[in-house]
Each structure stands twice: as C-alpha cells, then as structure tokens.
Amino acid sequence: MAIQPMEQFLVHKIVPLPPIPIPGLGMLDLSISNSVLFMLIAVVLISGFFLVAARRDLVPGRMQALAEMMYGMVDTVLTGGIIGDRGRPFLPFIFTLFLLIATLNLIGLAPAGFTVTSQLAITGTLAVMTFATVLVVGFARNGLGFFKLFWPSGMHPAMSAFLLPIELISFLIRPFTLALRLFGNMLGGHVVVYIFASFIIGLGAWGLHGLGLNNFGLLGSGLSFLMVVALTALDFVIAVIQAFVWAALTCVYLNEVVNLDHGH
Amino acid sequence: MDAQAAKYIGAGLAMTGLIGAGAGLGILFGNYLQAAIRNPAAAAGERTYLFLGMALAETMGLFGLVMGLLILFS
Image (tube, rainbow over all chains, first blue to last red; front, side, top):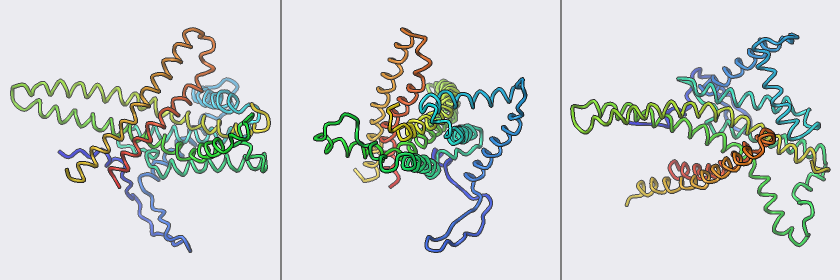
C-alpha cells in the first residue's frame, strides 16, 4: 500500500475553461479547480452567515451574538488594542482577512475538503496584498518620512552601517514569513494527520494477520486512532489561531507605519 | 550512497531546525503561565502578544521545513 501524504494537496480542474491570452504575459487559465471551488464555498459561507446574522435586532439572537462577538474581538483586541483609535479605518480589512483565512482553514478540515491555505500561491498572494497595504498606507500617511521606520530612535549614527541593513531585511522578509507560516502550519497539520491515519490501517492489517507477536499491531492501531482524534482537535485550534495571528501581525505592521510619528 | 538516499537524510536533518522552535514555544508558554499565575488580572491583556510570540517562534522552525521541502522536491 503506497502512502502518498502529499496527494491531498494536488490541484485538479473540475470545470475546465479555455485559457485566455494576456498580451505580453502569456496565457491566463481561469478554470474552476478544487482550490477555486473551496474559495467560492468559503465566500458563500461567510456572506450567507452575515446575511443571516446582521439583522440589527435590539436583542441579538444566537447568530447575531456570534457575529457581534467576532466583530468585537477584532475591534477591541486587534485594531483597537494594537493600533489604537487610528486603527479604526483598517477594521474591515483586518476582519475580512481574519474571516477568510479562518473559514478556509476550517473547511479544509472537513472530510474530503481541500485546504486552500495549504497552497503557497494563495498564502503568498494574501501576504503580498497585506505587505502592499502596509507600504501604501505608510507612504500615504508619512510621505518620505516612511524611511524613519528603518532608523531606530536613539541610534548612534555610527551604528547605522550595521543596524540599517538588519532593519531593512527584517522589513522586507515579512511577506515571506507571513506566507510560509500559514502554509507550513496547514501543510504540516494535514500531513501528520494523514500519516497517523495510514498507521491505523497498516498496523491494523498487520495485527489481524494470524496469532503471534504481531497482534500487538492492533494496540498500535488503536493508539494511532486516538492520536488522529487528538491531532484533528489540535488542527481546529491551530486553524483559528493562525487566522488570528495573521490578523494580529497585519495590525502590528500597520501600527508601525500609522503611528510612526509618535511612538505608540 | 546514492543521491536519492542522501536527499532523504538531508531532508530529515533539515527538520532538526524544529528543535529550536519547540524549545522556544516551551519557554514562551511556560513563562506566560508563570506570569499569569502570579498576576491573573494582567494575563488576558498579554494574550495577543503570547500568540504573536508563538507565531514568530514557529516561523524560525518552518524555515527548516521549507529547506526540507526544497531538498526533497527540487
């Protein structure tokens, strides 16, 4: 029995569409793949949830209370807590990122689900969007004063030869770390669950093969099953925490450029 | 030793970078719990930074994972 833990991350076309030629860039393939399908499912889920939840009742029902809790969490802990009052305009952006990543992670954990966030192309695109937002906001708010970001306050000018390259690299590496963190967590979580699930079948088949010492394989099979349950529970926690971490790091990066002139 | 075997060994060795991430996460959560037990009132306010620190500590380990994947699939 061949074990192929990476097979679950393959992108395959569900509705093939003819590629569209883009002048100067090559061909653009807009086929509906399983990745696109699950992104559409996530968008429909989020939009449907808020159509039901956002009824603006004076006494909130269950759905509205859940929506208000999530909104309040992002408002008070992330934008309000990290950026401050100036962070209020970024609330929709942060909230959208949080909801999209959390939903994509969670529907990836469903049986026969496809984890969109385990594709480096998707997390890379989201990271570039986040980084571009930080750059645009930084230059729009501060102009060329944006470059004060790389000049730590109170630095002796003689140290600048060492510290400026470090500050610059640690700023430019941010989109890579953002993308790799989400990608690595999702990939690792699913591969580990897959490998322990293959132990259940492999050790179980070995343990049922006649009488002898190999019957202890059944014990290993049962332990692997408990491990799969525990790891799946851990993956649910990680799915939400990684979405929270992405939103929080976006807030930290925005905070540096929004409150550049007065250290918040 | 043929090249494929060396690749597998190298990918395995690249994952030792996760030792550091594991130690870092242990230090992080241990110190957070210690502080939270000493001053429970202040614990909730620092939870955001706990998760931020967790993410940053994990990233260093995930660089090891990326090296492993690069060795295996390139």
